[in-house]
Length: 477
Image (tube, rainbow, N blue to C red; front, side, top):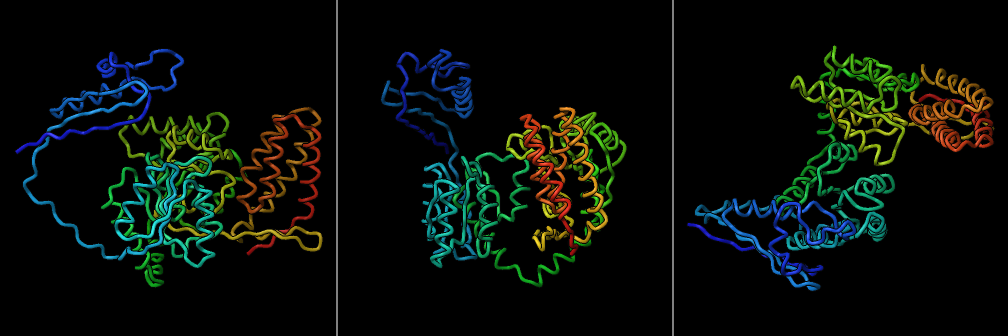
């Protein structure tokens, strides 16, 4: 009624000296204890493995030869199964011949996924990075044989899976394509980000063959089942979902007005806090369904406010409220810092209406609308097309920018680079949200020039910005 199985794992690495083979299974131990050793680690892995194996009635040992590699063995006791395993039903959606591209920087992962799918009749090709994947997708489109399924690793150098998906969707769209993300570590916010991009699924490795095939089948089944009638029913259903109570923590008046305009016709109720301390106090006094948290604020910044909110919730055993970080910093480390502080998701400024509403919808299941904005030149004028919902706010926004020019000029005369940096940072964070990507770019340049102490560059930017404001004309749609 029982069986003992032995597992062996071999490598072709450095090898282990014979007198160290037993030693390596002790806690906090490595074969090389010098501070210049090539490979790091705590020396706990093998000790933990030994304990687990012994708990399962087995033993673990190693064989090795220096310079040739090592083989680790372990045994474990198992009961023999007496009840037949249930047979899985045939897949309802035929996958044979499905044109598939696997994008993963690890060769063994590409091999495993490829063998899984090829064995079920899929036509599989592989790419070792995002850049190569984009080129292969483009070539397939041009040849009239587009890929129908893309399996993308989320953690790749240079261009990760999310960057790949964003670029692909922007350049080619996703018509008749299913994109599925596969990751080795399930990070907070990634599922929401995957849904925001419209990806079919987000799977965590290791993925069993049966699970992967079932998810592919389900994804294609969903794609086939969607009809115009069902979409209309879904829209009607979404509109009936409850309205949310949202707390917005933002010190910039321009950004506050912008976000209020976005949310104005959704039915959501929004409260305002102008710094982190006020946000914390308001959060403690009312029940909120969602918090929009600016990161850089006076008195108490967004990181601290979020940490304090999470601490307050934990002490009272309360359900975690979604907190969406809003920041003008776009690098990955800043996004991770927001998540580490306890934020649920991270939005980079300038905040676009569609992006904000998609994230709110993800956490509240309430549908919003998106704005379409564009810019063109005409007879010496700069014509900016903006959402009609912003008609009451844009004139004030542009007037504040004219005041910014005066403030920056005065600060420049005083050598006050910090004031210039702050004003530039605010422009960078608000411009694109109102539909003025140029103002975001100017703000970014001013912020950088102030940090570098480039007075002449700041003067040039102010002249350029002043000319822009004189020529800009807004058309509301």
